Length: 483
Image 1: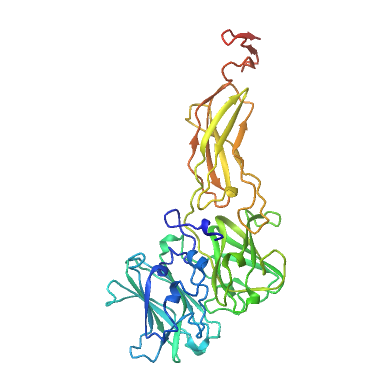
Image 2 (image 1 turned 45 degrees about the horizontal axis):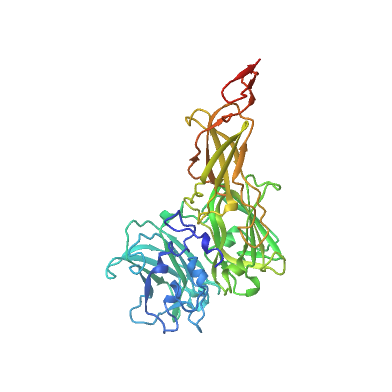
């Protein structure tokens, strides 16, 4: 499926989103519900049943695509608030997946129908499902009557160093007969550089300007109570210029879809810049969101995957509302999240480096290798030379290649060359070394060194000496110097 080959894992480098399967620990748990409403509202729809879901979304670590509340088909979990235990909650058992984990971060999506929304949540942990330790409690909201029909998204972060097997998310301050969840996501904050939503101006130093949009701001995009206009593009094409106080490392962002299919995303292009100046933007990725995610539903949480992680202070995003770069209608995103990665996997080390002398030149060749986190078109090469047996090396060139990305994929373009000629060298013996570097997030591989090569090569008939004289070697045994 498109994009799956680019997924990172906890074994290769820091994961890039709490929605990823091996980061969102709750996706591998089994769950049970206290005061559960009738079987129409099955708890497993929160964590990824094999029924009624999008397999790509599961593999990418997202909640099932049908996570919005729909009482006729059981797409969310509801609790019966009239039940005798009076403690509506979902209990997650991590034993079938990771066993235990010190989770300290949750995103909870409320039901999207006013009558079934909670007024807040409390989270606790346990290792025996009997005695529970309170971990955090959200700010209490004014019950169902205090919300619009849009619901809200509660991001809860707290301090927790204890690995628990069970986590319980309880519903607080509810009214009416039923209350429930749209989705629940839980992860360990140590996998990320920080726990701040990079789009939230109340958490990080970030600004943004929006073109061809209406009632749009970062505050709307990141508000806990879902704003009616998170990012609302009123024209066929809309864009956002986002600027942080320093470069950030990320892989993409999450959005929350509108209920109306007319406002679903289609295509997105991502640009980065070193300065933010008008004429200083590089196209990083073009993504066909519609094709990648497949059919979407209202209030679906979806991840827009840039591809190879990028590190930049200035980001420009251009959205098209259909599955092509041809404009057709407008677009609306209810909410947005982006988390900063703590690291990213370096490109693979080049292999098979050879150095061959001819006349006063040395020709270098090597093989390039693609890694799970690095497309060949995103790799550049740094080449260095030593004239003292490898004691010190001096940079001689960086090969960046020429990449033009215009199609509906991040991998289009011409990979960087795998050869170089170091010319007009003085006579001597040289060593070369080369490393690969990702041009979007700037991490580098280790160096691989060549064997030594001598200029001039043995058998050279004529050359200039370093004194400006001419040296002849007519039969490989007799040297004649002409001053």
